[in-house]
Length: 143
Image (cartoon, rainbow, N blue to C red; front, side):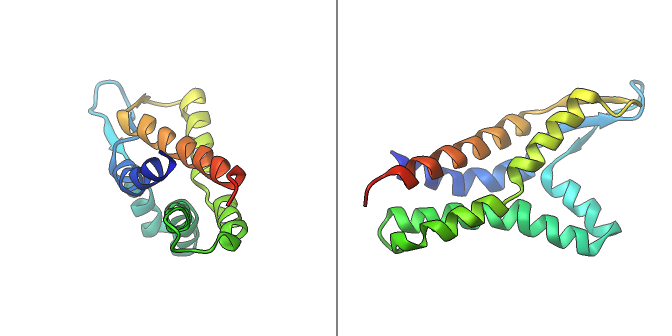
């Protein structure tokens, strides 16, 4: 069961990165723009390349590589001695930090305009919580 859930995350993470997390607009009269993880990163690449590189590594690659490593471990293609390294990679992954910051932003609002949550936020939340749970259960499993 854990194997199937972890494999599902390898597909669901990229979907969650492209899915709309929220819709934001300056004034209620104007249309709302959809914002995804990738569109936010794209905007960051246009303004601060170093920060964009750091956020891309820790928000995209680290969680996905951790999930891939865990899948390899679950299917016996990777030795269990690598589990501590995967746990460190999971701690470096900023997806959960990004999600918390996003919820705080949504709760407080930006003061001007309007923000609405979109379905991608729930998918992204499920991916992150699922990854944390799967990692925890796998680390407690006896070899």
